[in-house]
Length: 475
Image (cartoon, rainbow, N blue to C red; front, side):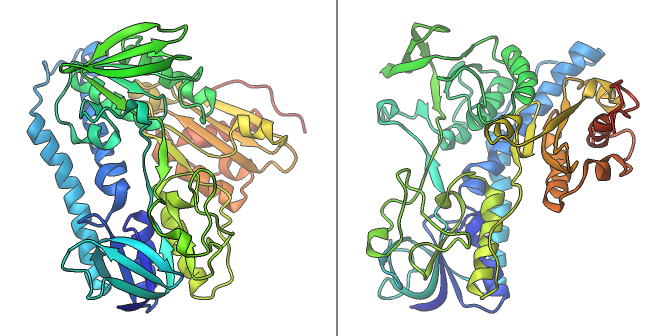
């Protein structure tokens, strides 16, 4: 079989690249090992986790209404099978839509594992009927979009479903009485939030001295305060997990650290210590493609690898490992293949942690600005001054801008609070366009909304915010 373009991987980057290439008239084949398009994000990551987080948030809101407003709904009754089915229907609807779009665009989808034979040929492993005769595809261009897999250190891999990665946790086999989350990153905290709201006693152990170490500390503090209550103070920082072992239907965990020491049993353990690029066993050694020590594929600003015919996008291309980055990289790679003079030089890529409260940031963080010696001024607007935040009882939030004091351009933004993931888009656009902080302060935002805090925080820069007092900025 011959084609102009083969895309290895049918996730957010892979199908975005394939569909754009087809729209531009190219002959395209997607090779995907899963029975469905969508990749980790859609099938066992972003989408199913957000469906479950929606349920967790509603459960949390009913508790808040009872505690703060005197409105009681009684004890929730959870039909686990129905909950799983609803989550799975969300995934099925979206994957089915991608299948239909591939057919409309005449993109050939082959269910198989791909391995490079050389710089212009891949061989296909599997026995699905979509695999062409000869089990090989010859191509003019290839895009590696193989994504990543959950990291599972060998010492934690006991061969039991009681020790889960994120995929296992999303399967929601049961609602355990107790669960330990190893790792204080966003995936562990999101899944911990789900299980805790469903009724599990969740504990978190983290080797470092804080949660979400890549995020701004101002943003993490309100979340950490909320999680301490949700997890009943069972967050153990600066603590190492020494070993895991099975004891009947329990997992024995040994702890080594100042916050917790000794052994404790849990019904389930979620190992959430990062993700590894899925670049092994691709036959890259048969091409000129090179990887770094972490397994990420090396590439230039056009996403072209050391092999001129082969491009790489998404998690396999390196940090940040985010679906929306992969999507844009996929489309960009096609622009390059089509001969357009362009480089992937986005000023900012937003990140969101879908806990409660949500955390979102884009551009430089305070820590990054300090490390890079970038001049900056920080302005913050507390949501306690927001009428909308007061009305919904969510005053713990904060909106902050990082501003270049000389040019007054916004160079970073961080938000913590409900809906932060939606609000951050305004900041990403502002940074991408090179907006000055005055552009934001003079843009009329609807009242009463949480989006006003973007404008209000900008006003703080000039000392003109109505609801809080800060001495006026000197000219």
